Image (cartoon, rainbow, N blue to C red; front, side, top):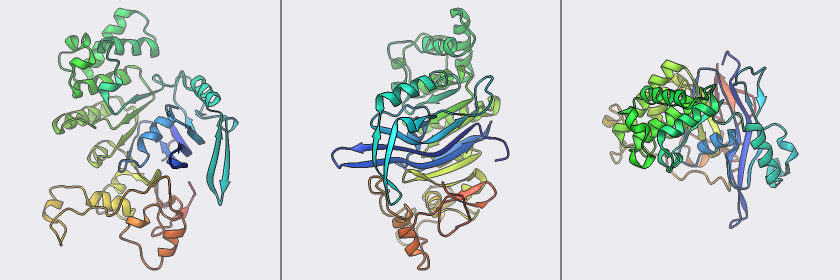
Length: 378
C-alpha cells in the first residue's frame, strides 16, 4: 500500500462470554487490516471465521458482553478531517484484562460506560462517513416505512439537503442508479412488497445516498438466487467503477471477491491468515500461498476443476476436519489440524507456536511457518 490508509484496524479483539461453557468465544482475535482510499478490500473465509463481527466491531454495533475489548480503528474519512482518528479511542478506560501466558483469561468491562462512549464517538460516523449494507436486506429495512421514505431520510440526515421534495428526487435518482425496476413505483412500496434482490438494491441506494467515505458490504449476495446474485455483483462492479468508493467487502464467495476486490484478506479462526493483492492471493498458480487459501481455491468448482476431480473418489477436494473452535483456540497455528502441507521439520512449531503475520512479498503478508518471511507481528 503506497497511499496512507483510509481505514486501519490494529489488533482488534472482540470476545463474547458463554455462561454455559464458562469460556470466551474469541470471535475476532488480533485482526489487523488496512484499506487505501478508493480500494476494495475483500474479506473471505468460512462461516464463523470472524468476518462479520469484524465489520460490526468497526462501527461499535456488537451486541452482547464483553464485545470489543482491545484494538484501534483509525479512520481518515469525513469532510474536513485533519487526519486519522481512532474510533475506539479511550477503550482502555472501560476495560480491564487479566492475562496468563500471554493469553486473555478474564475481562472486566464497564459495558454501559463503553456503550455511551461509543455512541458519542460514532454518532456522526455511522451512516454518513461509514455506511453499511447488512446481510439480510429484508430484515434490515424498516417494514413499516416505505422504501422511498427510508432513502429520503438518509439523504436528509447525512447530506446538505433539507427540503423534502429535493430529498425525494435524490432518492429516486439513487433508485435509478442501482437499476431498480420502476423506481417511482418502488419508492412508495414497503419492503415486504419487494423481492430480496429489490430490497438489496434499495439498501445499496440508501447506503450510497449518504455519500460515505467508506462502504461496508456484509455478504451482499447471501440469500439471493444465483441469477440475482450475479446481477447484484454486476451492479456493485458498475458502482465501484463509477464512484470509486472505498469498500470493505465481506463474503464467503471467492468468485465475488475475485471480481470486485483489489486486495484480499483470508480469515480463519477469528484472525487473518493471509493479506495481499487479489492477483497474488486468489490466482491458483501464484506462490507463495497460505495452505488454507490454497485449500479454499482447490475446493471451488469451475470449468477447470470439473475435469480434474479427486483421483480417489471423483469428487472435488474438500478441507478435512472442522473449523477451529474459537472457545478453545490452539496454542500453535489455528489451521494446523486441517493442514495437508505440514512437514516433520515444522510440525512441532505448527502445534505449539502461532506464526506471526509476516511479509512474504511486497504488500503480501502470511501467517504460516512454511513461509516465515519478515515477521511484523499482528
